[in-house]
Image 1: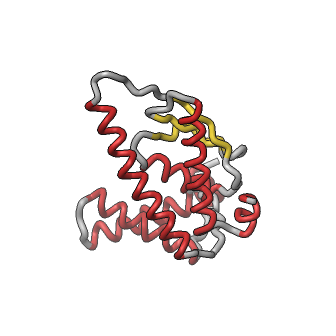
Image 2 (image 1 turned 30 degrees about the vertical axis):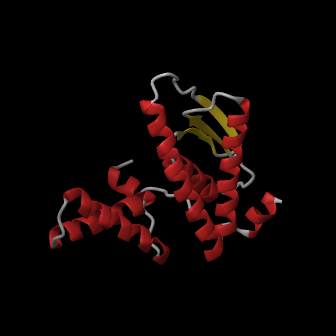
Image 3 (image 1 turned 90 degrees about the vertical axis):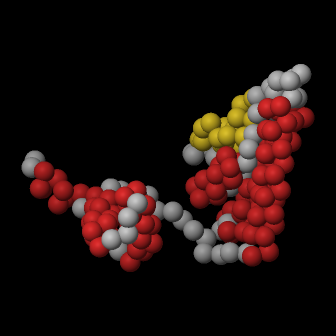
Length: 183
């Protein structure tokens, strides 16, 4: 089979729902070239159209709902934990007497949504002192590396924090099915 026939069989036409993705790819292209010009915009559009047209990107199911009250709670919780995590990591770095005891913790999420799973993992990874090692998408399990998880109580507390982040995200942007899974 020739390359032309393979490309013709694999190419899909760009839909109106692909426009935000195209826009983001063009912006990324211009940032990579560190230039805003007619050439970078034009070549960005061509590359973005080729990427969207040739490569399969799985659809992300969004609930289409947003709760500003829960979003404010999520943001406040995230910022608070960001500060606490930074202070904890800084204290572990300057404290000469004890080394932190890291651990890998598996956390089973209640939601089966890929979007909620991804957002929960991103939130956890942005908080200092924790990092996502692996995600089992089919079982909705996040494997988390925690910097200081010496005791079983500390590990259970970290699991509760992950579940709290998931609950805040589901209440903010989750679907009706996600909300039912929390009960």
